[in-house]
Length: 215
Image: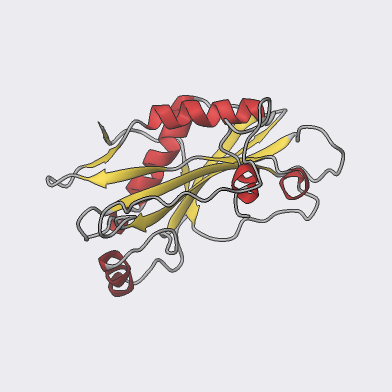
């Protein structure tokens, strides 16, 4: 468990024009659920062939501008990760093995012909968001701040090839216990479909694998 420490940052910070009201935030944190409420900020970093990773920014949470021809919408160049930050009794904040998430994220990137992100930049982006939204840790027992780093292909091009422009984003959501009364017994459902096959993308954490598992 790595405790977050203050350090100089190379991330730009955009002021939030209307952060959540303290009373509204307190209501959310008392019963956060999972994946339906989001914190005030997000982190974005751009990539292109000429500049590599650049424009690292902590910005107000909101919609991402996207061209209708963006490669992610047509050829599913998209990957993501999921991890949690915790607040200790002494008030310090910690992440659990973010370097392992960075390694898996880059393994997914290689499989989908996307640029790898340096481990230090991946971890720094997550730490920046946790610091910016430190007030969003749930107050319920077992609560945590769920973090979702993802990367999408943003180049506007309909040809079938790896995109030349990407955006890395981290968003956060306060989370309670996923299983409120403990992990239940698992029912097995046999399907005619398969989520992964030899030589496929089953080892990559990409949206297409999850979409294929919904039926």
